[in-house]
Amino acid sequence: MSNLVSKSFLLLVEDSDEDFTAFLRFSRPFLQEHPVKRCRNGEEGLQFLEEIDSIIHDYNSQYPSLIILDLNLPGIDGREILTRITENSQWKHIPIVIFSSSNDPKDINFCYEHGAKSYIPKPMDIDLLKKTIYILWEYWFHLVVLPSK
Image 1: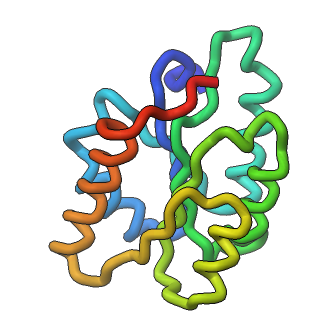
Image 2: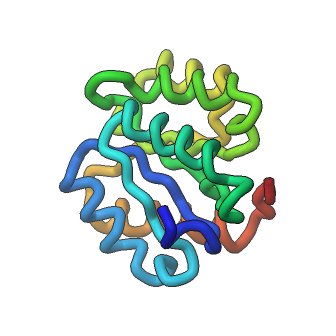
């Protein structure tokens, strides 16, 4: 945790090593300024946020500037994580972007109804994936103003 306390960072909750590797590869231009913390499943993601809660005042730590969340995770899935985060008074200010292979309208509607700020289907085409990840970084870290809680 100590390497994340002074910088804005992105929390990526993603179980697929392949998807995580691709995300990092296409994120290289942004990683020095905004590191990525990965959690491999829902339990790990929620535990990470709880750890931040326990040290935030003592060590000048901060919450992630953005959470990118896969829906189809083992154990506690992305829908449950989304609901828990948006219902928690300490975490609900963190913007959540869903980055999922699901194109199911029920999933999309559920996510927006439960506080997701964006829903991005994961492209299968590698060039489109690269472009999508670049646009995501540009939009969330260079175009919009994120909360500073």
